[in-house]
Image: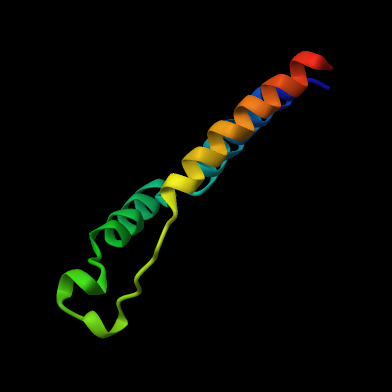
Length: 82
């Protein structure tokens, strides 16, 4: 089956299921919205001045960008030859 058809069908099914769930449990949407707002309002520890729990993350963004470009070109070449 084509992946696009599967994606569209899954999207429609998920939308219908979520809408039915909201209708079955009144107030669920408001509770979910309130919880999401509370979660988004929390500040990370670094903004509060708590530096002892801060983790430094090193992301090799240049290597990731280069690998993405190379793999994209390689995939396109393979698909053209196949």
